[in-house]
Length: 524
Image (cartoon, rainbow, N blue to C red; front, side):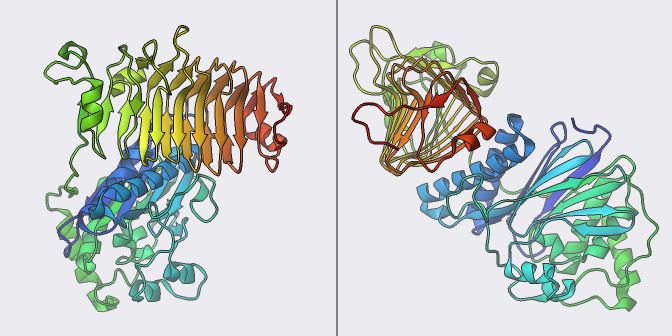
């Protein structure tokens, strides 16, 4: 439960040198979500990476399944893999990535997820403590005590990072990817999240001073911190989020003798003048700068008649939409309508079973092939960066369905989708990669999910119910990550190196039992 007495504010500014703003931020106080993102890649690429990160993290954290740690890891991983796929689909975005710091606050604690050199500080009782550790050569030396804060701020390699979000594919539990910290959030403390546009220009002590001086007014503190960074040099975008506990107050600790950096350390004699200038700047009307938004994704509504789509939105047949769809597009089916044509997925395209409000209420489009149709209901053949959200894939008793979804050397994310009655619910062949969340696979005539080949499966909080073969069968080198899934009264065929007791610790096995090898089958 989120403490409703928290005070908070956030803002971003492009600085005095750059015209564009590659930073982004997000606050969802109701769910206790606070996020800062610093895009990498220059111009539109960095902005796009930051935009994707905010969107994917927000989407995952709004669905409150699993522990907070799991949600944070999954959210950052979803952002990472989506940024990578977007970069692969557009040459102008090649090499884009971002760094970020995310805090999920619940009552008197916070779970922090961190990649890169953005930061989270705790400010309490006249002291400031850096919670995160910079994933950069200079930051690591500063944390180890080899460099002072001022030496690190001056260092020519200050902006290099050795971890980021988006440059290579990751799973949520990959080592050397996401740092998770657990912070006790006392009622007399404040948490400050910022990009390096602040921490490279303003010392920690001076940051603490401005926050405490404005205790009870986080918006004023945020404004003055951004102004201080811009007065120091303003060479980078700067983003600041501040969250105050209900008892956070000024400590009365003296003003630090050295404030922030302006082409070197500010002389003590200039301190009073600079403080006065900061105060003057804080009085001006302040509008947080926003990045130029990237174009909204194009939504292609699937329907044979305009009556099945929102008024004023033209609808097209499924064949027309599939032919027209390009990377970045959303193919949106009409919730409650049945479609009887197989779907061949295209790289970079999202396939959605209704509008967001409809999906939230449980309504979905139904994909049920016409009698006489052959092959899977959904085919992914050598495609990348594809998503399926909120579909129901049903087999007709009079029309056998060999696979609900078939992946061949492809990567696919599936969210909140149901597959019922197929011979095999989902099948992976070759080096396919599947990320699957909050889905249901039920009543398959054979296996619920079958993976053969050196593929990779990441399954989180799905249900496998009443499948007549194995709920899950992984063979021929398939790698698995299983968290929070329900396997109901059926067998599991897992690689020999996966311990069944470890699976039981992380998932819910209802009357599941180890598989008995079928006659003639190779032992796993």
